[in-house]
Amino acid sequence: MKVLIGVVSLAGAACFDGQKIATAQSSRISTDRYESQHDGYVADFQESLAKLIVDCQTRNLQDAVDEMLPWQAAVDVASLSDRKLPQEVQRDIPLSLPQDERLWRIEFRTIRQELAKNLYLLSRRVLNDGNPHAAWRLIHEILWYDSDYGRARTLLGYEQYGDEWVTPFAAKKMRDRFVWHDKFGWLPAVHVERYEKGERFYRNRWYTAQKEAELRRQWVHGWEIETDNYLLKTNVSLEEGVVLAKKLEVFHEWFQRAFPAFFNTPAQLKVLFGPANRRRRVKRSPFVVHYYRNKEEYVRRLIQKNPQIAITNGIYTPDERTSHFYVDPNSDIEATVYHEATHQILYELNPKPRRIAVNEHFWILEGFACYVESFRPLADGISIGNPDYVRFYFAQHNLLEDGFFVPLDRFASLSKNAYQAPMHISERYSQASGVVHFYMHYENGLYRDAMIDHFAALYRPIAPGFRIGGMDHFTGVPYSKLSQQYRDYITGLDSNPNRLAAAIQAAGQAAAAKAAIPEPAGPQQ
Ligand SMILES: [Zn+2]
Image (cartoon, rainbow, N blue to C red; front, side):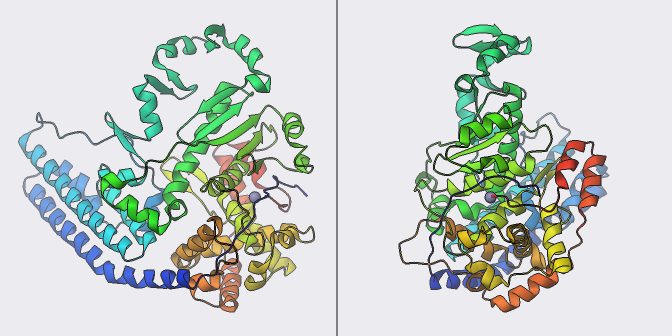
């Protein structure tokens, strides 16, 4: 049995929560109430768009018609958070354009801006009415219609620098005359040419790349690569470190867009959506990641605190607030990286040392990280929750072939120790992955907001003596019914890990394919 990854000694708190339940239920009602306003704004936009298209048709402006027609299709709002936002600010419409073209372009932009403004005002009303999830969905929709809507960009953590939307960290680097280099990361602009010729700057002098690599092989002299959200230390190489840091950034950017509810309590959200001058200025505190040359070095550095480290292939250690990975030529580390990065992002939401879900609900901590392992960036967005991913396959296989199933109330009641007991640990990891898949995707995400609320509550510090309600409370559906729905859902999942492997191989990533079909998946923590 292949045992993946390491030990997270997180732990838990809980808050019994009649209030949370009330919030989760009232949010549905407020969504319905605002749905007609939302649809009214979109209908106004569509009416203006239709008029503009007809107008262009009568004037034989075929390019204009071709550009605008796709905007008549309905927008799949749920998938907008998986879309990467354009980095460039839209250019002004040039005065030099022919008059006809200039006019339709101005009009087309104006009606989109108008809709974005209405949706923004709506998002504030929705938020004030207690539905942060719906408010965030509106933010993504606003940026679909107007990718330069400043307030929505700010909410997602961007600022404008020149003609680009960047993070405050990137803006500071650029003000300090650094440039982002795809191979070497941030460099002083004046160093770029020499780096590209194979020279390296270290300790105030220039070396050859080869000499620098020799000097930095020792861990204490390793490279430190800073990106928007990460500080990655490595003695592998600068280039390999940048590759990993970029993966982490793409992942983090998506995670923050997809799950904004983790990052802000409802009270913090009101400040964020409120007047601009009350916005939080958060001190930069990057996620620390260590990336070692090989497994021996990884084990040597971590074994003292983690005697089981040798059976892992990556670990997040909450007491040091650091993720650790190593170069493994025999496997694709991507799944491991996203799993541990998830633990790290969620734990470090709060500076307070705390134990997460130690007495109950531990399944979701690992189930969610295993679900997120299936994250893969694509050219035009991301993929997550592919049913062919090995974790979901075994959730189904164990249920149907081996009859392994822990009813969801009992599953939720397991403490960290009970969950991690050696007997059937692989099966529990598989079921946890399957249950998260169910809560995320069942009936087009019917339970998704409730699950994120439940999980986010587990990560927040709470007063002693309080407990977090289970998914039965957050959904308002009894566990017996949820259990049956889960069994039906996972039974019907079209899952085939060989198909995934074939697809990855077809994409020319043989190494990744190999890692995607291990033997029955072991515990991954
Ligand atoms: Zn884990």
